[in-house]
Amino acid sequence: MKKVMNTAIIYFILAMVGGVFYREFTKFNDFTAPTTLGVIHTHLLALGVGVFLLVAVLFKISNLAENKLYRRFYLLYNIGLPLMIIMMTVRGVFQVLGTNLSRGMNGMISGIAGLSHITVAVALFMLLLAVKKVLSEA
Image (cartoon, rainbow, N blue to C red):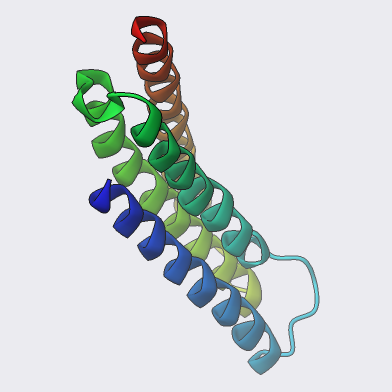
């Protein structure tokens, strides 16, 4: 439970940093158009803090922590979500700076972002299966 709450706290701090970075970086560069940086804050709050707060509640009412699928979820999710946020940050910084990317670089950023989204989706599916199993056993 402590590990889950620490994870939620870390994602909360990153969400706050992401929001401040978005505001200050766009203001410093006189950028007013929509950018990927604008959604980093909400992604971290919902997918980072929200998911792990729900997991913490589930820890209290079930033996989810002992589930093998949950442990795999935790590892995979904490690889995929930070990678997603990194790629959103990279994309957003290039947008704000007005950097013209080559087709290859643009494709690479999109590809890595896509893989990170798939990783997060697979991890969430694993969490759903783990929750289903532990709740059906109760």
